[in-house]
Image 1 (cartoon, rainbow, N blue to C red):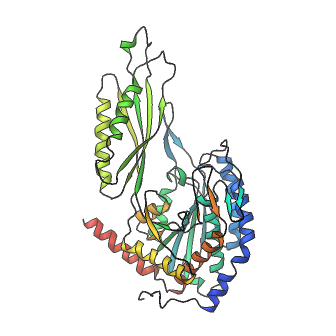
Image 2: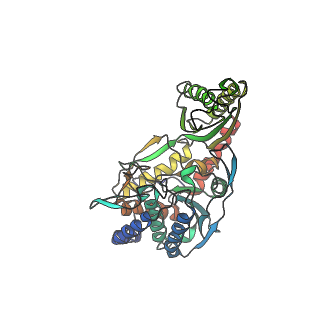
Length: 431
């Protein structure tokens, strides 16, 4: 099917009727969001995640779809004692409808937040009539509501049967999707197009190209000793870690758009003991797929430098969990659809590259073209100043609905877009 230009694309009377059903739902959407924001669902709060999943299931029943808990793969975590521990994650919530339809979509979101259950920021409050400050309101419980509202609206279209979908709502996105990444890859391989509902940028722009990301922990072990009586017998793990940290930070600027960030150091105790253990946790961001090999080489060199010290051992754990997501021709096609859909609604859609990462990176790694900031408009996420603009619950739901309606009608050709992505992946592999 040839591309539909913006001049040719229009809304049918029925499609406009469908869109008109969304504004009256605003009060219900706001009240639901306030309840969801009040439920702590930190990535590490198993009880809170269970409660949040129940709230999501209650809302998802409206979709008349198959709703299941999807058990995620376990992961590994380095404790503050330097021990590698197997970690289990809460289940994802998976919603499936029409799995045999000719066009398959994957829609993703996460129901975990960065706010621990003992953090002071736990309840939403109004800033003004159109702004609520609350945990997860923008990132991304509001986005999940936008997604579900659009999927409900889709069912009013006579073309709805042309589209099948799987929704994956994960509990571990804020910690890098260690458990859900495998499932994201599986769904991305099967789907023609992916839609992710992370929040838009504060001005309403979408994130375009995204960097890749990885997380590591370096375990440094030395030898404890009395700091006064037998200092010479000790081997200071913190001093060795400090040398590693300085060298790691020195890698910044050596390769374009590659950044290294030390986030946390554990270790030590009483000041009269030579510390025998230090754990350094850090993140690396890369722009190009080829950067990961260079990063790995540098990290191995620095680890070996520490490991060769007398009485010191160093072990590097972790790795890249999300590859870069470029503005490839296939991804650009999906963004163009969003722009066309916005134009029909009088919304000007722009995008900008982002150093942040999300599940859209994982979907693209599986060969699934996608757009990943279809959620609400808000800002200052990951802080106690996080906010949402309440009118965006409706406007972004309308935007997502238009995209779904045009995918269902075939005016947005999902199969051709997937083929374009496959060609690009093949050419990348050839190089």
